[in-house]
Length: 88
Length: 379
Image (tube, rainbow over all chains, first blue to last red; front, side, top):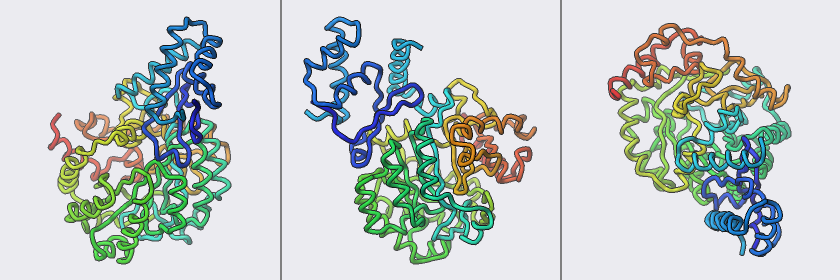
């Protein structure tokens, strides 16, 4: 899975905000914000990556147990699917 | 701030937005981030609406200053984006009148702004349609001044512009943008609410009205005395349209209003903070700004002065310096003692300056509106 092209992540007022560019504006469904883990996952998803690769990247980056990482990842992926930014 | 604290703050922020406890604009105001900006690309307009507060002929314009070039606007947009501008309103005059509009718009569309375009739609062409299909503005506001060519002749000085507006709306309704039709009501069109809204609804459900006619600013001239409605007429029209507007409830509209609302309804004090400049009760100069066609940064388009000069000193210094210019300005003594000051009157210094020529003088027009509001809405 990877992110569709046409989105920028902008850092505004200490927040990471996903902004659609050009034709992606059509799919705008409100403002999507990323927390730090979200931002990390977002960066990983700029290239094609599998679920298990994503999970191990999170575990390498953060000192958290697998169950927490999995919960964070699933939450993010659900939100990303809801916003239509993911290509699977 | 360490990463975990920052993460926590971001999560809290997201929760606040989701529960509508705070708008992004208010969050930005607390940090003095210039979230919402307006680029007034030109004072020129092909229409001559008699109530317009901003329009200048080319010759009048040249006596005052010069329009900033496409290159200058694009460079300014880059600086604004870097400083945190997310919502950008492109307006005029009529922005489509600029020959280099496409150049400016294309560049701005790829910088990560949420763009709103204000236009009278009369200058829409197949080429512009192609451009907007490729880079749709998130929202587009089109002004419609009457339900017939006769009304357009009375208000805008040109009967054909009615048909041109409808043609422009035909083209714009093919663009995937949140299209809103807006009407300013004056004496000449005040009986046409239903008809104008019916026409608007052929293109979009979003229909908003303006009933307040402000005096002209920054060298423009208008015939406000012969245009203005009485306060009773103003509130009658507002109430007649409010019920209609409330029925609109699409998710994107909620998202737009939650995150992009820049009008005076957002009172800074409602969020429990009191930010400089205190004389300004909305978020202007706190998280909002306006850059005029000749390069002045103002809290909003209703101001004339004081201002900073972002094209000369740079965007960030101009933005940071803006609130300090208003530090020593006080409202008129009468306003401070007035029974309508708490919520029934916007106590807007920009309107006072425009109406009475001074921040320190009251305006009969504003007082009468506040009285009528107080009479109708006791709470």
